Length: 321
Image 1 (cartoon, rainbow, N blue to C red):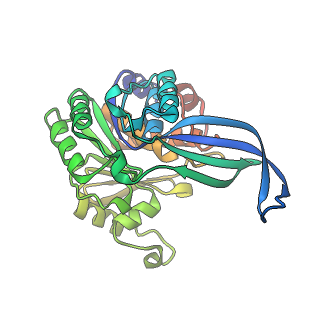
Image 2: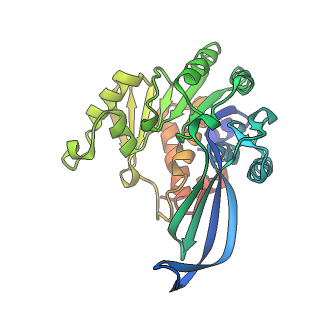
């Protein structure tokens, strides 16, 4: 792992997708409101972290890669805060992806005694976050200089089928890996990415199956075959939660790597850690199994933390499953 982490350092990875602020309000609730049958939360702490595709980029930086983020945010207070958070983490966020009139997405989670009570989303319709012509030209220029590209789809509007086609065409000129973390409800008409990383529920949906079709057992072979028929990824890695990771190549179900998590405190953002680590490792020359072992370890570190988090090389190397 040390050798692979050393090779990851300095790899240039471009992250394209939906950017947002994750806002946490922490407190306690000891009484019910006299105004309505709801708890009254006394807030004693709040924090802001970069979320969505921005969290993928920050995970890459934590590993030592050079991360460039392409995702639309506004020139509003939340956009300013996002820019500060990214700069503080060492992520490159070009000015081409900030616009007057764009409302930066904010997800506010109210947390009581480490349990999420509710989430409040502030965002606009998906067309609001699509890349305009100038931003699209800027991101394609970044793709042309990348060692790898991650498409981080949170179904907010950044990722569209025609954009993916353009990215794949640009990346193909240098043989650059393109990885996709999909949201099935977006129904992307794309084919031929180098890596796809759905979770179990997303994989079933991508395969056109429901949990009721599975009789209590995840149909690995059928899921891998169906996803490959429709999307043709070279590598498919399905995150199975407590059951680990399923590896698939060219539509064939392969090895399942058991989870490395010692304790699961919060799975929020773990998928971002997985695709960041897998992509960085593959860009550094690892095979898919070695990349998956590294990603599984990084995810084991992250789920032991609360909220959106990252795993440093030191934490990965000292982690004992």
